[in-house]
Amino acid sequence: MKLKLGILDQSPTIEGGSSMQALNNSIDLALFADKSGFHSVIYSEHHGVEAYGSSSPEILSAVVLSKTQRIKVGTGGIMMKNYSAYKIAEWAKMLGSLFPERFILGLGKAPGGLKDAVSALNNHRPVILSSQEAKLEEVIHYIKEEKGIYDRLIAQPKDPAYLPEILWLGSGIQSAREAAQHGVGYSYADFMRNDMGMESTEIYCNEFSRNQYGKAPSLQIAVAVSVADDLKTARYNAYGMAYQFLQARHIQAPEALLPTAIIEQRIMGSEDEKEFSDILNHIIVDTPGNISRRLQEKAEEYNTDELLILCNMFRETDRIDTYKSIILGN
Image (cartoon, rainbow, N blue to C red):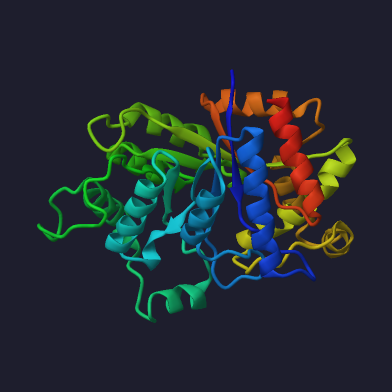
């Protein structure tokens, strides 16, 4: 099975580096992905954390779309609780019109930051968590120019030739069911590691409504990957990514990527050692000659042909080498 491989780029920063360096790395990675045959590149949204250089995936998407030729580019995802449905629909229609059939609108329900960041984004007003699916429905109404809350309100540009592809991000049954009911694509975060992956993705495919936004289910699986010439190096290169996952699980703001030696000093013999090891073991770690088989197995496990690859590493050359090995093996 020929896989459609995408890149999930969080614009990771490194200890001693800068956000500007991380953003330039993201643009360089997108240019490489465009030329080498990747299907898509998707940008995440994070606020108020040192670990990631981009807080505005829609802006980064616009920049990268203007610099590339064929690759699909999108948000993964816009954290809906922080914005109005109307504004999301406006810029999504604009990017979809300026770059027809290349822009992907990925939307999610996560906060995208810790308490203070979410409060600041919402002008210090309480966030109504239960409204996110209703907001997705409102976004769809504005994009499709259907009757909604405001009967005659237009989200410009009007009458686009192509509607942007929509992905609903999630890691559980509820998100899968919402994506299916609204007929949009579903991006399941396998790298977040829980036990609901197979059940939620099966629910999405089985319950997908073909009378809504899309004509057929579009299932994407996001996985964390590290590739190097030998397994020990590949595992070591994944330490920074695994440590950020650990911090996020503990509801801590992830730090910039640290060298492996520093993480070893912090983790080995600590109360977090087993949890860190479990997280690390869930990352797909392999060599160039075997990575294609591992990715095929993951795709077959979920019965899809589309994988989104997350790879955060302290050394940017190791990150690029991982993506090179993946695309060459495909």
